[in-house]
Length: 266
Ligand SMILES: NC(=O)c1ccc[n+]([C@@H]2O[C@H](COP(=O)([O-])OP(=O)(O)OC[C@H]3O[C@@H](n4cnc5c(N)ncnc54)[C@H](OP(=O)(O)O)[C@@H]3O)[C@@H](O)[C@H]2O)c1
Image 1: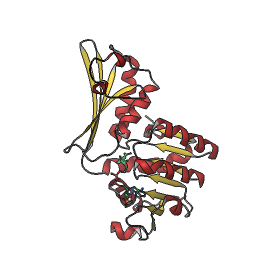
Image 2: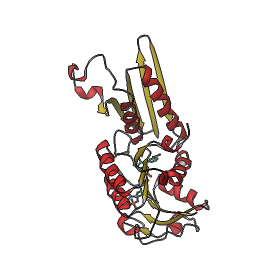
Image 3: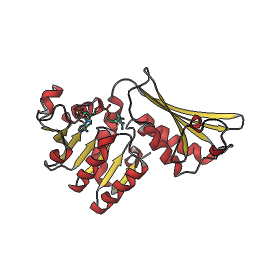
Image 4: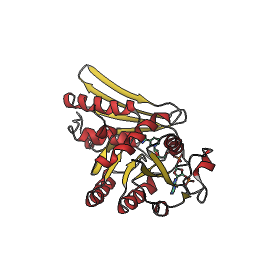
């Protein structure tokens, strides 16, 4: 069976790499694409990949006029929720790669997905080493009650914390609430120095030239520390295999699921 895919953000850094990978598959058919600057053109001309015959639209609502099984959302945080809700409204399943959606956004999306009996698989990071970081951190949090998260990214990343850090904090909130020795409200000095509280975890976001994307979690106990860290390189390659797996598996889910391990046997 061939799955019809609509890809929002198909001309971007992450989306274009995914589009080229979809072109090489025999079980996925990219039927429509979303991006503003190249709207009206054919994706294959823009990406120099003749196998990609999908037309590009500025609005997801127009692209979704092409019936599809799965919408992949890979645009920007300010636009993502609208696209996801539109796709669910049309009866498509959704894979979310875009970062910046809040727990509140996901709760709203979950409500519509369940009413529509459709799956939404949101992965703050599709890279296998991030999936492993999440699993190892969950195991550590069962035994160690204090941790903080550091999120490193390139200077022009607009959203903070990263989707990777948000997702990690969300998952750890399902394990337990961290117990800082000094409660945050008793901080002497600017409260911001302790970072943002995201799903109960303290998260510190660095935005500097020279970084790509890294995520680090430090667990502390008296006289011992555990650091788990993921670093990605410059290409979008690490995200492709995970995104393809998510597209193929999302129809097995109902409602919002966060993290690629929702469809992996780990
Ligand atoms: N989950 C993961 O593993 C993973 C990996 C990499 C990146 N990301 C996240 O994915 C998102 C995209 O990252 P990127 O680096 O690929 O960004 P990018 O290179 O700027 O690409 C964004 C894409 O979305 C389109 N777009 C942006 N705003 C739009 C709008 N309002 N309407 C329609 N199209 C729009 C852009 O085309 P136009 O500008 O022409 O509209 C472009 O095709 C970010 O949130 C990033 O953090 C996630």
